[in-house]
Image (cartoon, rainbow, N blue to C red; front, side, top):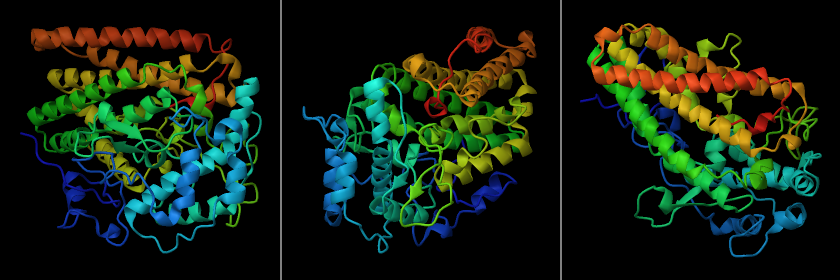
Length: 482
């Protein structure tokens, strides 16, 4: 049986292994750093990357006007009527009706997290409303609003500072993992029992995107537990436990892929909300970033990468755990170059620990030193490939070529993602080539051949994409999720 992982993980991880990781947590299971204002996003083997408590679906009555505007915001409100974003009246309502709320007295973690979600929704809707209208009219984005008004900017900056987050729409804390409610409060966190709290467009595709990611994240607790056991067993040379932990990780990833393949298969309406997921960095609609009225900032505005660059941490966990970053000679992976800095603080601490401990232990070399472990390592990479390739393919197919920016930087970034997925496929092939098939039981031999066949199909497909990149219009950075 697998060793139980620590209940809660501190933001201050050490880099010398599993035992010191456990000692970073006090006897109550909560890091002392969070006793005053505990963070809702604390990575555990029970909740994984989901928040400690279900999100607060309705704000306290003090924020009645804010709640009202959020209810009126979506393009389609869900009751057969159109909302403020449909007619382009959202910005006007913000400027004339949203009060300047005082949030200095709020320290409750659930209220802070709910306010962060809601103010980041307001910020993206306000800034990008002109771009969405322009896209619907002419299939180009035009320019976003440059100044975020003080009645959004000042409270958002205060809240973000209190929970150590960036003051911009983020994947986990804003758009998905803190944006769901259970239809039956006593029921399971399943696809059929989840609905979003906030939406931009209100379409079925947006609902499926949010619901699918939340339901899939139910499996991340098992992934967290397995990742720690992989590190522990490799450090202690416990081969049997190592293989079992790899199987657990692969099984959890397979469930994640199964949920997402069902919920994200229809991308026909993605364009109705994708504009609002854009960041304000490296985007043509934000030439000078965003100015936060009433707060200090740079003279050229502040720049943040947005939802796509702060996407689901599953891919980053796999990248760090299985040492996949070494496949990229320039270090230009999705979890590099500031991307992980957008995630919740405890995510960053946990992923940093996994990265450092995996390098110290050399998980990849330990796996490849044994034929049975090599097959289990291949099986885990097979699920990583399925996860990454499906998202890449769905997004590529869902974005009309004629709407993409022609900036060379966007094409280069897209090619970086393509090359990395291809390189993971090639790692699977190299791993199989180094296995002595005579040492495998027949079932593992068949499994390895099946995995390497799928990897070869992906490698060929991506090589064709890269070969055609000069003729293919580039895709915007903000649309590449990982």
